[in-house]
Length: 271
Image 1 (cartoon, rainbow, N blue to C red):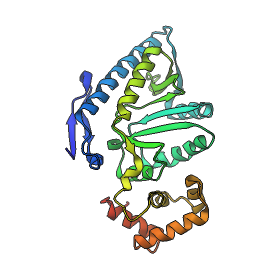
Image 2 (cartoon, rainbow, N blue to C red; image 1 turned 90 degrees about the vertical axis):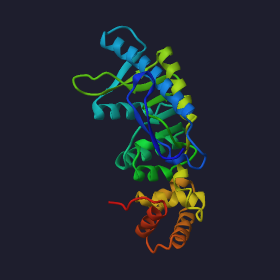
Image 3 (cartoon, one colour; image 1 turned 180 degrees about the vertical axis):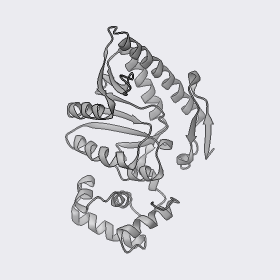
Image 4 (cartoon, one colour; image 1 turned 45 degrees about the vertical axis):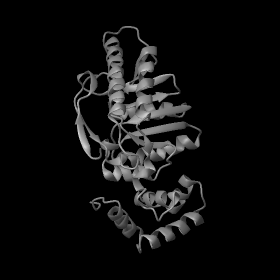
């Protein structure tokens, strides 16, 4: 089955729009796998509600609020991210603007030794955001069916949405064993639906995998030096690949290459 479908979540959760269009290369995203994600998500939400309730009642629980409001949450994560050894991240949505901030920050952490797997909910991203992710390391960035956001840190804690405090959203760092078990089950269920983000440009069969990454990085206004650093190749190699890409796409400039790329992938023109 290819296209979209609407499904009722387990445990009475609201219906989600399931986007199966990205799974044409392997057949279908089976209902059994999506159902497993729904069930694991419902259990994790139950555990999260238990933890949040305990925090609101000021009961002892292995969890704490680590940030309040978007700015406070970001500052808290920046302060602690350099101490992480492993990160298993699930993002249910994102924009190009957010990616232009988060991807370079992630690259710094990866260069410093962080072992990360980042899963993005395919149907929660617009085509431009998916194209940006297609230029990232396919061993790190994956698309999948991932309707609930979370981060597992070093296998010992999980970051989840916390209670609303004075009208502001919060994030909680949870080390409770039951919640961690539920988070791991949800991660495993989501991981079974994933595939590398670079599959988004697989239709460009005349380009090598590295050239496909280069052309998508070009669209984010990355310099030749930045692209070379991201791909761990020389600037000379990048410039040679760019020349080949422009020729194969019959594009005289980088801007024209972006237009050709969108045409080839059936994407709307950039606004």
